Each structure stands twice: as structure tokens, then as C-alpha cells.
Image (cartoon, rainbow, N blue to C red; front, side, top):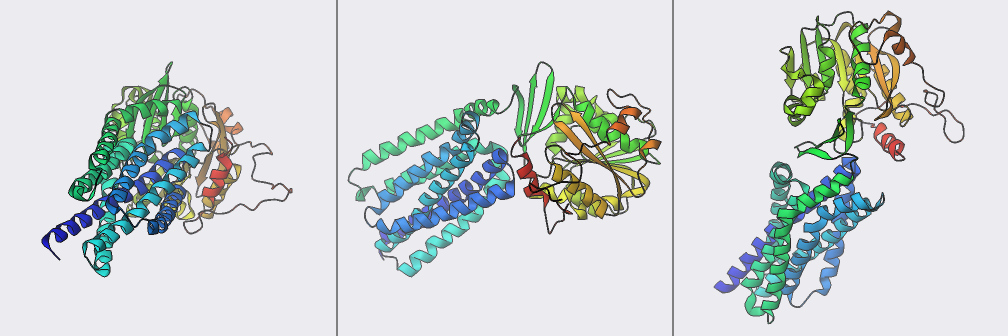
Length: 517
């Protein structure tokens, strides 16, 4: 094979590797976007990856008909991937903000299938071109596929460790699209002797390239205005961390925190939630010296705990250091939590709660407060399993109390009582409470101990805005429509399942329950 052909074949291998990096990034990007906007990350990643691969299969089938003008065909495929993929997350936020519910999912899945199909056309064309140059089919296929698979690994690592945390979803899409178009322009110039209308195709590529550059500078700001439509109040702070999207909104003094689109608190009524989370457990524990909080990175549970002089240590375990940093430094949040993190008794651990409990086997706590997000995906589900509550029980000192936020018994009745049964399966006695939090609605908690719970002995003797001893007794009363005798449509009593790592029963129930709200 002559030297020129060798150079051309190497150019094809490089192009293959780079566009495969782009392809895998788009694939996981769509999964991340679906997880953020639609919830249930495992479901969204499964659907988007499945659709992307299906699209690649369709594209590979279509590629059989591409036998002429291989370089131009490849160039225009990259142009299309660039413009469609680049605008994908930008437009997805617009669809979510302005169109009716369900259209965002339809748009995301359609885009995933289309970009997957275009990606599926790439490799067969490059293999065919390498073969046309003079490389044997066996060698061209092996080398192009090697470049593709190796590029896939690089793309996945780049997205997880660099692109998503540094640029977010919208800018990442534009950046990757620019790379696609840049590769197309490079290949176009490299093989320009084969192209009769070279300037026309070059001009089209430059226009698309400039549009995508504009997206880098203005797309995220515009998408932010779309995202603002998803929230009732103006957004005053936003951050995409390694773990989640943090949003703070504020309107007429009402401060609200959202994590991945889910409301965590409203300053107008959060005291109802946090007083119920903290004080029943504190007032039923034999000792109140060593406290463990799982979650609660906003510092609001710490604020309530600091009302007890006998507390000697408060260990707060929150996976995301950015949430804790917000609780330490954001002026509005610091005002709300009353500078809770400045208390010398507070020790923060930025760790996974499950792993923390497994690795700190010798530590016992008088009170354990579990203030974690609802179990709406696989990673959160493990924090509502029998295995998790067994670990919690093993860290509980004799006479100690556990309080667990357990979603809404009104909106997700079956999920709430499943959590309660799972706690009981860990050889703990439980008492059930629920409280009306206007920004949330009716919200449920599970109070647990190694011995039977007696709220009659509870005595709340610290300053509160809502909770009293008399009110506490009323929180244990559940109406017939939300008690644990749950009936199906035929009037039959539904069994309540224990949630485990191997049988995560509550994720689907949770999604189904909240679909109407």
C-alpha cells in the first residue's frame, strides 16, 4: 500500500476513535438528562442506552445503502450529529418548561434514537472507506472497531470526571457536538481532492460550527431561563455537583432548596418537618449525648439538636460536600440554620451513609436521625432496605431512638407502610407519625427503638414553633384511607412487602404513587 493510502487509513482510524468518544458521551449525557428531568436514574439510563443501541442497529442497517461518496456521507452524518446532539439538552429544557407533561420524555427518547441511528451509520462507512483505500476488510474492520471501543472508554471517563461536573449538561452537549463537526471538517479537508463541491460543504460545516460556538456562550444562560419556568420562584443559586443538581429559589422571603428537582425544604414551614424529625426521638431516648444524622446537609436538623445542652457530639453524614458547603456559607441558608455548622460539637463526614455504617462498627449513638431524600432511584433505595436498617440498629445505643423520614403516607401510602415494615423486620419496634407541612403536604415519619415505643413518656422541653407534647400525641393518628390496611381496587387487602437490596420493591411503588402529583 502506498504511503498516501497509509496516511489516509490512519486518518480514518483517528476519526473513528474520536467520534466514538463523542458517541458514548452523548449516550450517557441523555441518560443523565433523563435522570435529572424525569427521575429514576436506573430507568432513564436503561431506556436511553437501550434506545441508543437500537438506533445504532438501525443505522448500521441503513448504512448498507451508502456505497458512494463515502467521505461526504460521513461528513454530513457528523454535521447532523453535531446540530441535533448539540441542541439536544438545550431544547429538552425548553420542552420541559413549555410543553405538557410527557413531551419531555418523548423528545428525549426520540433524540436518543436519532443520534444513535446516525452514530450507527458512522463505523460501516469508515470501514468501507478504509477498504476502498486498500486496507483488507479483516484489518480495516478490526482497527476501526478497536478505535471505536477504546474511544468509548475514554468518552465515559471524560463525561463522569470532567465534562458533567465542569460544564453541566447543556454546555457538554455543545462541546461534544463541536468535536463532531471539527472531525467532519478535518476529514473533509483531508480528502478534498475527492470532493467536487468542496467549498459548499465546507461552508455548511463552518455555519454549523459557528452555531454551536454560539451555543457554548449563550445556550446555558437561555436554558437557565427555561429551567426557571420549572420552579415557582426565582432561582438564586444553581450548581451541578458530582452527585446532583442543587437549586435554591427565593420569593418574598420564602427560601426553597431543590435537589435534582425535588423540594427539600421551604423556609416558610420547614420547622414543622424538622421539629417532628428531631424532638420525638430526642424526648424518647434514655441519653442524648452522641447524635448521628444521616443526610441533613442543610444544617436544619442540627439547628434543632443544638437546643439540647446535654448533647456532646453531632456527627453529620452527607454524601455531597456541596450541600454541606451551602449550609455553611450561603447567607440565606446560614440564617435559616442559625449558623449550625459553627458549633464545635458538629463533625461532618462526606460519605455514603450505607458505607459509613458498615465501616464504623464500634461507634454507638443515642439518637440516629435519618433525613435522606425519598427512595426514587436505586442508589437511594439501598438506604431504605432491611440491610440498611440492620446496620442502623447495630449503631444504636441501648435505650436509644431512631427517627426516619419516610415519605408521604397520603401520596405514597404503600411506600410509607413498606418502610415501616422493613424497619420492623430489622428487629425494631416502631411508632408511626405524620404531620402536615404545607409546602410538602402530609408527611410521614417512623420512630424506632430496640424496645417498645411509649410516647406517653415523651417530654418536649425545648423551645419550638409548632410541636408540643399534646400535638405529638395527635401525630400518631392515621385516617382509614392512609392506614396500613391498604385495599386494591377489588377491595382485597394488599400485602405489605419488606424492601431489601435483592428485592427493591418500593421504587416502582414510589414512582407509581407520585405520578399523579
